Structures are given as structure tokens and as C-alpha cells.
Length: 205
Image 1 (cartoon, rainbow, N blue to C red):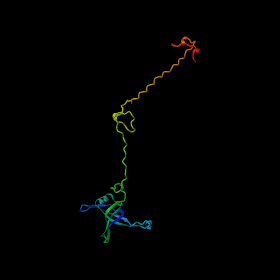
Image 2: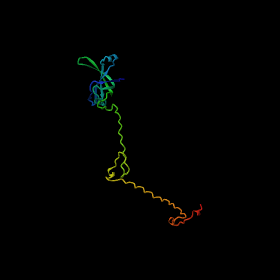
Image 3: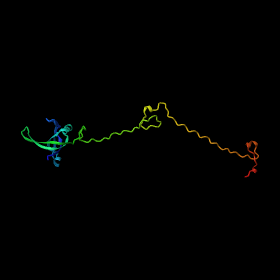
Image 4: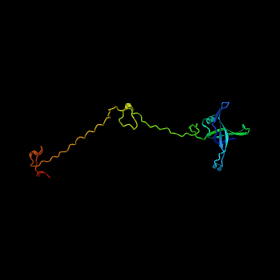
């Protein structure tokens, strides 16, 4: 089974072309750095790289041409083949070509246009504040805070809300009148009508 996975950076911008059969294909080159020893890293030695020519077909190639650029980091999975050619100096060289089955974009897009390859952060929809329905007619009760009644139901200038009638005053309670029993020897003016002066000795107690 011929299946290769490489991770590297593009050495040039991708190029989209169309075959005589009308199929779109995108070509770009990926540089894959070789492993370095700890000593080489400490000395700051520039790592060596292997170069792979990648071909992505149809919709995959169109996305690569749209969202990739020189220097972007990608992971490519596909089958690899070796093609030999002779340079201008007469030396025969080998070129590794990858027919991509999948291309993963590993560098963030500065324009935030990733074509769906990176998850967008979820933003909840703003909640709307509930507004009560308009009253059928003028209301004398206080409206809820933040709610304004329709213009046709708003009180006119100079309008005063009806006030409750004051409670009636309680009826006066008659006070009992104490009448002193007349005694003997009282003057006729001090004896009320219907009473007779009596002697205290005639009282039974």
C-alpha cells in the first residue's frame, strides 16, 4: 500500500490549472525539514529539507489555491511517486511527487477565511427583552418599567386620574345624661318636671 504523510511549509504560492479534460488541479511544493540532533540545534545549524511536489485535484485543489500561500504549514496525505529529470547542467535528478488525498491547513488564516477547515467560535444569539402586549384601553395602574403605552391610550395634557371619594365621617354617638334625684328642701326651680321632692328619710336604703 502506497500511502505517505508529510508535514511542511509551502515554498511557493499554489498554482491552479485545468487539464484538457476540464478537471482542475492545484500544484504546490512542500519543504519537509529533516530531524536534527541536539548539538546541531544548539549550534544553530540550518536544517536540511526534502521537497515534495503535491498535486490536489478538483474541489480539494480549488480550496488549496484559495486558502494556501507561500510559507503556510500543511499536512498532506496521499500516494508518492518518483519522477526523474535531467537538469540544464546535464545531471539526472529525482523529484518526489504526491497525489494528495487529503490536505489539512495547519496555519491560521490572517483574513479569517478558512473555508470551514477551522471551527468557528460559537456566539449565542442575543436575547430579546419581553415586552407586554398593548392594553385594550386606558389603564390607571402604573405601567411596567421601560414600557410606554401607545399614543392613542396616553392621557391627554391636563388630564387627572380620578381620585377615590373620602370615607364619610362616623355619626356622633349620643352621650347619656345623668339626672340627679331631687331631694327634700330643694327649690321648685331645681325640681324638673315630673319629679317630686322626697325626704331622705323616706328612702328604703
